[in-house]
Amino acid sequence: MTPLIIDYGHGGLIDGVYQTPGGKQYTFTDVQPPLTLYEGVSNRKTAAALMRLALMAGYPVWDCVADRQVLSAPLWSDLQQLDISLSARVRSANNFPAGLLISCHSNAVGNAIKGPSQSANGIDIYTSRGTTRADAVASSVYDSFKENMQGLRVRAGDYVDGDSDHEADFYIVRKTVMPAVLGEIGFFTNLSDAQYLAELQNHGQIALCYWYGIEEHLRRGTQ
Image (tube, rainbow, N blue to C red; front, side, top):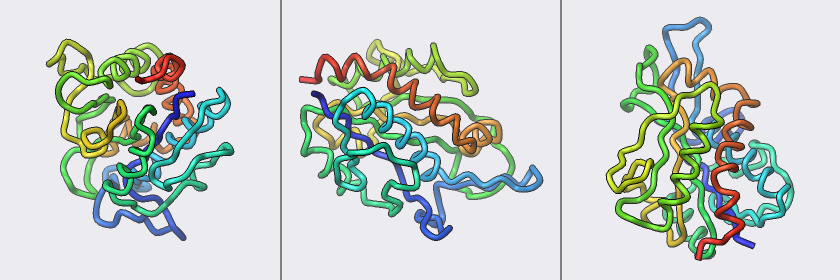
């Protein structure tokens, strides 16, 4: 069966300390009490929920951050919390060229770690540039979010090569050899999106949107 390879961006929490200091987090100063959203924690919540769905369906799951197979349904706190380098994640993923990679992220405006809510919001689905085997998967994931997502808007794609995903030079999708799709699910610098991402149960819905988009591709294989 086609392995599902899951990447979750940035660091998590160890003893309450965020493992990506100085970035990939945002504290909203225009609400009381202030809300802080750590992107790496949010990414892990989605990744763990997606791992559980794939395991229930009987697919092999590889965690390329921890560099290990996932054999039992994890909580987000069970996942690797260190901020593992992108090169190490890619090396781990590339052991499974016949797999399919999903990289879980959320988006931001600028590099500030605190301030008022920013207006940009919503979901973007990315592949590497040009026509690749990931395009069909990304289109399916995009369509699934458009059809099934409640609580976050889905932003229009670039349509530069006739499909609905955005294209970028993100390292994890550019350097991996299997079809790879990166989801920027919500803006953690937007208060409404951050409030949605802060609720654990909402990551189950995000994972289902991914799953409905990729399950057929896993079943058919990626070769």
